[in-house]
Length: 84
Image (tube, rainbow, N blue to C red):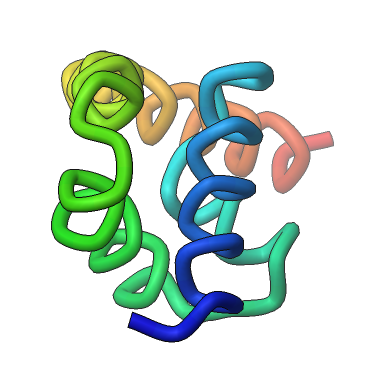
């Protein structure tokens, strides 16, 4: 694996741990696709640093469990703005 890919995977992992960011937010911040973030975190990071990969997986699993709530809130705000 190339050095810049390993470095990006570690930077993504640290960013997600520090901020609790979603895959989408991390992709936007680093200017890469959601698929790249997912690949870096699930596959590449597990080879580089399995402990860090497990910590990030917990954050991502939590984000996945809460996404229906965030989606509902986004829809609520959308219609609140439309009616105002």
